[in-house]
Image (tube, rainbow over the protein chains, first blue to last red):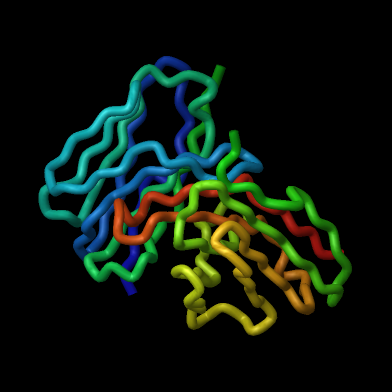
Length: 112
Length: 114
């Protein structure tokens, strides 16, 4: 089945630094999504991308839908302590059976 | 206000003792999902309902069952929990056919099996 390769698996950064993570696949997707999960909570949708090449921002977050439809990245600028958590990419395959596929997540740690 | 509400947030059960987790939504979404998430892993889809149509994932054990009595409510029944079923269980909703992939998750129910 289709898989998403998300990297890095974890990141340790200083507060104020910018962050970049990405997701790749050997298959194409119609939609790319980025979710954030705080400890002990459910994931929350951060950004959804619907068109190849689309670049979308949400505050300090910027994400892009790769032109080949096989990848996406998420950038966080000027990280703050509340950015700590697990970031999951997810993709909606071309066959619309209402199931999305999740990456394995990037765990973000922020050092004081 | 919470739009997808899961109860209980924490459930402790004994090995083999049945458990029911509940999920309610105020979004009037026609698709509801149950995911299992183990520590440091991605959510794993167990099954979903498209309106009243039940869709089971091929690798979901028979030990897991679900009911959706109406649009707003969905239940996850674990008939005989084993130690390997200890996990966070996440309910999610979406509007099928519109921005599919945008899931609204509840806060989760964490199951401990003793």
